[in-house]
Each structure stands twice: as C-alpha cells, then as structure tokens.
Image (cartoon, rainbow, N blue to C red):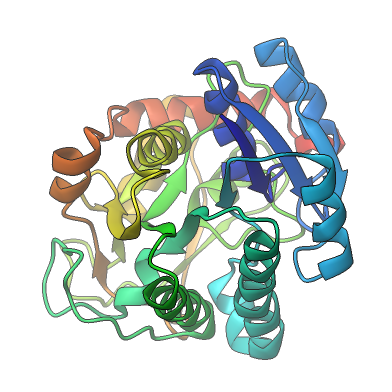
Length: 337
C-alpha cells in the first residue's frame, strides 16, 4: 500500500516510515520541516535500504497538497503533521488551532478532491482532560484542559462529522499517550527544537551535558511520590499501532477510536531514576511549580486495540530508557550534530 505520511520527518512519523517499509508498504513523506530535519530521510534509508519519496510543504497549503496527490497515487494517509507542546499551546493557542485543526480540515478537503477516503489521525490522550478515574477507556468523557488537547479534540469532532456525512470513509482516531524511546540502531530518536517540552528528551539532554538540570513541575500531586504519572509508550510500539490500524481498517468504513498505551503509569521520578541507572550518572533536578494544563495521572486501558487490532505494546520501561540513551549518547546534539 502507498501511504502518505504527513509530518513523516518528525519523531513518530519517521519511526512509522521505517515500520511501513519493513512491512512492505511504500511511504510518501510530506513535512514542512518546522520541527524536523531532512537528514532524517538519510537515516531512514540507512536503516531500511529504502529512501521514501519526499515533498517539502505544509498541509495548510492547498496548492501544495494538490501537487502531492497529483504526483503520488496514495491509498491511505497517516496524519502526524502538527504542533504538540502543551506549554506553548497555552501561550500561543491560535497557532495550535491553525496548524492542528485548520491543517487537518485542509488535508481532508484535498483528500476528498483526490478520491482518497482512508485516514489515520494522530490524536492524543489529552482529549480526555482530567479523567475521573484511570485506566482511561475510549468511551470516557472528553474535556481537554489545554489548547493543544482542545485542538486535537476539535479535529476529532470535525472528522466525526465529516465521516457521518461521508459514510464510505474510513477514519481512525489513535489517541496515544506519552511516546518515548528511539530506534534501536541509535540512528533515529526525538530531537526537539529548542528546550524540550517532553520529559525523557530533557532528562537525556541533562545526562549528556547539554542542560544543567531537570525541572520537575509539581511534587504535590495525589500520586505515590507526588509527581505526575503518565503512560510512557515506546515509539516503535506506537508506530506498529499505526500499521495495525492501517492493515485492519484502511478499507473498513466508519469512525474507529483506539487508545495506544501500555496500560501502566510511571511517575516523573520513576523515569528519572530509571534513566540514572541506565546512563550510570546522577540526573540533577529541581522541583518547580505545576504547569498550567497538567494533570496528576493519566494512563490507558489498551484492551480495545488488542481486541480489534491485535496490537499491544511490547517494549518495557528498561528498553525505552536504554534506546533513548543510546540515541542521545550517539547523537549528543541531535540530528544537527
């Protein structure tokens, strides 16, 4: 199957391209490179022996998408392109609504014009807001607590309405939890622009000497050690979840919703101490006030994905941390090194 991967040079997109190639699919990458680098394509080729077709541009640009669909006869689209930093979204909400909502609507509009009706959408557990209980199931109420989460939830609602009006479409909403880890080759990993917004890249940059210490945002949550608890999932497991959805549902009309997580929660300090053990060095940290929009605890009930897609996360916390450290220690300055 030929699959358009928007944001395919990014962290999750690049790992998904590798898994697509590994399983006999043909990815076509589009990316505006605002949070990624073109050298990622070299790394994908190094790992797989195949270089994905690439076109640089933005999903908000209709003329660009028209050229993409005229050039490549794709069967399905996996839509990663978007912005993802909770803190930045609080400061710049319109930027997030423009990119994450308007970009998605424009993509679907151009897919429809090109007679492509199979979409896998990169959503987020943030659509659940502060859940009444954990683990979180797909039928839990949605109530995002920050603009990033709301942008994903708005896009989901738009896609639901669109699919209802166009019942021949297959639209899969994958709500995933906290992606971490890297490819086990050490050639691909998470390389955030500027200050990392996610925990493990920040910990890794402290461990490699790029940053002085980690800021731990809040130690007064109602959790075992007072720090926030999240469901961390290896990026390769996450990529395989997209392949499972593609293989099972690409041609099955309807709206399909799945959590992609491990079903286990780990605290910030759990992750920090696990990283210290792997890197064999202390990670200095400082307790700071809670961040706006953060919640105490968030982890998945992944049973639906297992039952319907035959997918479940396989890589444990030790592997997540080891792969992250291998990537960071081999690439101390990320792809720019």
